[in-house]
Length: 76
Image (cartoon, rainbow, N blue to C red; front, side, top):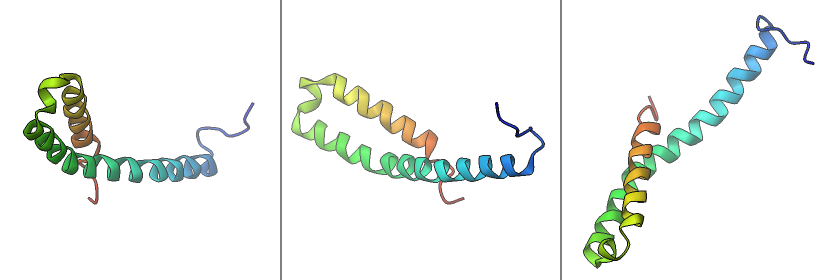
């Protein structure tokens, strides 16, 4: 069992450090994927791959939406 309590300032600092260490890369990847994925989708549509494998297009659209949500607070 841990001896840290919710009021322990060291545990709170560690949690904030971990949170900021995880948030920044997630926001970075979300932001840049939201920028890059539409170009990938356009190239797939132009090449006709979208008609052959609509599941790939649906997955990329879902990844783009996730990137938009996760990356909206990047560099704010």
